[in-house]
Structure formats: C-alpha cells, structure tokens
Length: 245
Ligand code: NAI
Image 1 (cartoon, rainbow, N blue to C red):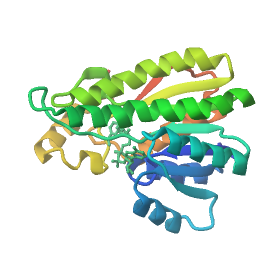
Image 2 (image 1 turned 90 degrees about the vertical axis):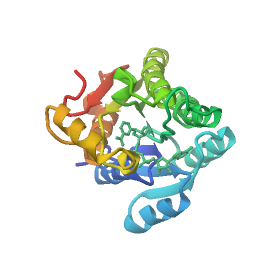
Image 3 (image 1 turned 120 degrees about the horizontal axis):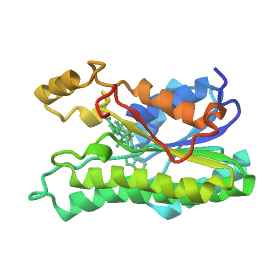
Image 4 (image 1 turned 60 degrees about the vertical axis):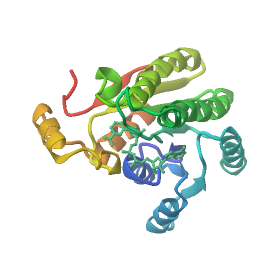
C-alpha cells in the first residue's frame, strides 16, 4: 500500500482488461491516475466504479499526436507533473503473412508502436525537466518468441523491447527508468478470440499451469513504477508463468 503515494500516473488503454486493473491497483497504491482510452463508454464506467478516488478519464487516441499533446498540457497545468507513464494500450489484428491486409498491418503498427512513441516523447520531456520519472511499456511473450499469424503484432512487441533499450540509454542519465513487461497469455478480451483447444495447450505448456490474470501484470507495472525498482532500467520483465525461458 502507498508505494505510489501522490505520484501522477498516466495509464494508456486503461479502460479495459489489464489497463483497468492497473488503474485500480495504482489508486490503491496512492497514485493520482489519469486513464487514457479511446473507449469513452468503458472510461465513464471505470469512473463510476471508482467514484471519489483520484481518477480522471480522458478520451485520447494515442495514435493522434495532437490529442496526446493536448491531454499532456492539461495534466501538467492541473497536476504540475507526470511521474509515471504506463504504455499499455495495444491491439491485435491477426492474419497469416499470406492473408494480412495493409490495413491490418498498419493499424497494429500505429497503436502498438506509434502510440507508444507519441506518449513517451510527449511525456518524457516533462520528466526530463523534473529529473525523474518511470516509463513502463507493454511488450508480450510473442515479442520474444514469435507467433503464428501475428506478423504485425510480433513486430510491434519486439519493437517495444528495442525502444525500451534505446530510451533506457537516452533517458537513464536524466533520472528516468524505462522498462517493459512481457505478459504471457492473460485472460482478457484480447485472448477471447483464441480457440479453447489452443488455450488448454497453452495452460499445459506453462509451468505454473494456468493463464495469467490482469492482476499479475498490474502488479509488475506497480513494481516497475515504484522506488523499489529504482535501479532497474532497460529490462523486459517476463510475467508469463514460465512459458518462455
Ligand atoms: P484489451 O483489449 O482488453 O484493452 C486494451 C485497451 O486499449 C482497450 O480499452 C482499448 O480501448 C484501448 N485502446 C486501443 N487502442 C487505443 C488507442 N489508440 N488509444 C488509446 N487506447 C486504446 O487488452 P489487454 O489484454 O488488456 O492488453 C493490454 C496490453 O497488454 C496490450 O498492449 C497488449 O498487447 C498487451 N498484452 C496482452 C496480453 C494478453 O494476453 N491479454 C499478452 C501480452 C501482451
């Protein structure tokens, strides 16, 4: 409790799934949380469920740089700084190499890479001014080992690992820690499209014998955003029950 007391945290894709649980964990840990998501309805529901807490929802499409810049300007004006950025928003548009359309390829690159770049560039500038900050981005196990039918998604999740190393070098000297989390298969809407048989197979292959829960990833985001992780920089933390070793 209170590991993030009074820290101002932006969580992208915070209205659903892993992001939603992350927002709630950050609130429990004493952070002031700003949730960015394109899904207004889910964002308003999250606000309703967390009434009275230090939570704001802003409808922001992370791919749209001017929306990101406007949202950052508002936060700086209102809260004075941003201490933590969780680059959690991500999408899948699966198809095999032969069948993948340009639209499928580009839309995943836009959200999972350009969105992460936009938020990090816009927010890190203010962290540099302050001389401190924590940035954690969502990679994936498939960014480490590849996956059938996910050329677009895997390119972005491997890309996040590379970007994390670049930014850890560039921003580390400015007092900012930059890390990533590589979740295994987590029970959210994102994995609902995976056939039951494949899920069973994944459970069997995972030494801990189960899919992950959103809480498992939210806990890793909290840890990497806290002072306990102050000497961790440029790493990608696997949170996958031992699926990839
Ligand atoms: P989800 O689909 O449940 O939630 C993603 C949220 O991001 C949604 O609320 C959506 O509206 C929002 N979003 C999408 N595009 C956006 C944009 N352009 N701007 C702002 N918000 C946007 O996804 P889930 O499962 O919670 O995943 C969260 C992150 O974890 C993603 O980056 C995903 O790639 C990653 N991940 C998830 C795994 C899983 O098994 N669920 C495994 C490995 C990584």
